[in-house]
Length: 438
Image 1 (cartoon, rainbow, N blue to C red):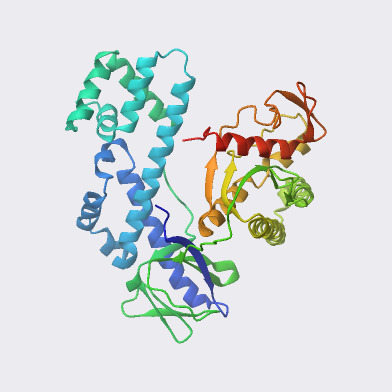
Image 2 (image 1 turned 135 degrees about the vertical axis):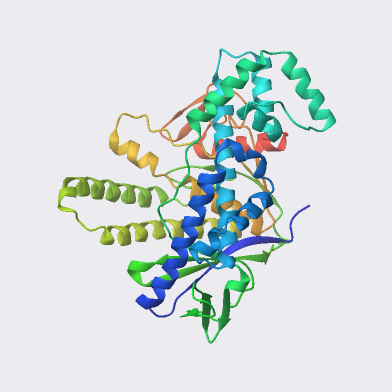
């Protein structure tokens, strides 16, 4: 069932520069927030606390009993949010570690199919994973999962595989710690909108910092306050639910192909973002020049303020152009269903440093994120298709061909077509015949 609303992040900004005294009070909160997170990372980031991570209330109760909040003088409205932010980071770290091990298991030719199956099962079932790392028998499991575990454990040398999993975890799991204090989350009780601004609680009882804002919008939800002490400003990030827009005239089924020089090409031959390659090339050249210049003069400790301002200007221009062209795509094509392949990772293997630098800075992640976001906002379905050999396949006869200078030529029927158009049509054909990614 399609969601009726989606979550977006809106931003609010201070109207006037924040005074140094007020900024210091906010920095105190951010520092305390950081210290709580580091404490949680150190105490609950290891294998002994795996059983406590879900849902996390056991850790919350232990932190309450530790009297850490009273020692730090951090208000409860920030203390408990810092705990759950840290727990979210720990869970994410464990997920990344498991994904890394699964990828290595798939490539390991020394493991049999049964052994790989057991390792994947152990990584996916939390109780089994926790028992393996802590070297104790597996605890309670649902009847069907317990039966499956016994079958898998009986088909392999379990002790050897347990040692293998422990070895991989020690190798790939990193110790978590943060030295930066960029901001803090605030619950509804930690702030109040009034007088054209926001009052934010501080460490001093019954005293709040007042920050005038550039807008008069008011929200009642958890928000994030990001601090910029050097610029005497703050940025408030608020998650809001917005209604999904339904368009009765969006009826087309379209295949699309993403590229680096031309951002997006449809199966109908329409191009969007034709100037992206030039903008990207200009940005990559500037970055390369600035990096070389900075490395030559690093001993003189040159400032980076102008560099960050200019870098932000280049990125904003790129992102503005990407969003502009994506909006034009939806207005013109009016899609109901979009077929696409997962964007490939840029492979820096040309041997040319300039080209490698250009490839590594491709905005593929931002393009995909914004495209999927706009599809959700406009009630457009997205279907990902299998991408193997899709650019070499002929959209007319299905035979294989070659690509040269942006043109596809079929070896079977001699069909010639623009490479990206041919790819987009094959993507659409595969999607409509059911060859989709799960």
